[in-house]
Amino acid sequence: MKNYAPSRMELAPRDIVSRSIVTECLQGRGFVDEESGLCYVLLDLRHLGEEKINKRLPMIREIVIKTLGIDPVDEPIPVRPAMHYMMGGVHVDLYGQVMLDEDKTKVPNLWAAGEAANVSVHGANRLGSNSLSECLVWGRLTGAAAARYAMSAPDSMLDYGGDIATKVANEESRIFNKLLHKEVGAENPYAIREEMNRTMDTYVYVFRDKSGLEEAYSTIKRLRERFPNVRIEDKGRYYNTNLRDVLELDFLLEQAELIIVGALTRTESRGAHYRLDYPKRDDANWLKHTLYFYTTDGPRLSYVPVRITRWKPEERKY
Image (tube, rainbow, N blue to C red; front, side):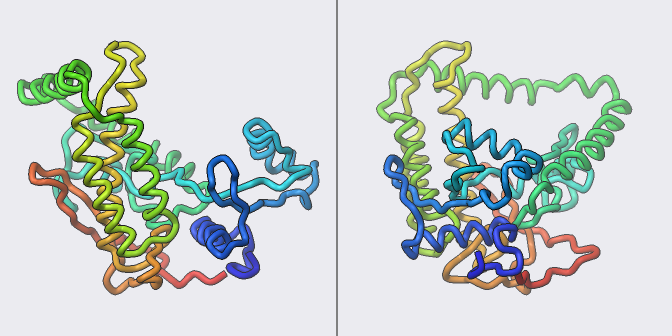
């Protein structure tokens, strides 16, 4: 890390550490796992000593011992970047009510908070522990706002009417009749998911560029075309993990396509989004959030400006 962030070392922001790890791997200085073929580097905590590790990092030690059979007191930990948080989410106002458009129309009776919502706290790079702060702050703000709304709502709000009831019935029919009880399809959903994972890991990972993103887009489009023909082996209605996996795959394929389109469109590097062909941040053109809206003709891509109050964006130097 002296080569990448000498003042912060391994405590630099996680996007910088991630790019540093992958760079070491690409330049042949990493280790390769024999079973998976994945490259990794070693995180060394041994200099901290057992007492400090037990006091400051007890859960890290427990996880490493249980999952890898390695004690970080005695051995370095193999690490590589992995996605574990979505720095985005459902478009909401400052108090968590879901928005139907960019900034004017609210969705009645619908609220979102925590990692599900995008209240513009993190931008393109969540700092460590900020997700906890988000849950605490907007758990209270959104919960209180939704409670006030519900307590003052008329009883007629409980009567959803024919339109919503019809939509619910149609969705249940899609899941339990068209998916679960349709004729056996030719496509294995787990094979599609494996190819999706491999595609995203190869082309939409820590480093991105135009040609790779275009390759990923064409692959994901083909996988989405194959998806309607997937087969579900388990026809049961209770604890059906096979059905759950297929429903999840449907959503993941859609999300993958949206992520790729957003990355292709954003011709800059910002936070965790890093384009090798556009390595600089471009505040003049891209200081804005990417939004997608569902339409019958497909996703509608839009943008809203970043709300800046106290701290202006600055170049990060470590």
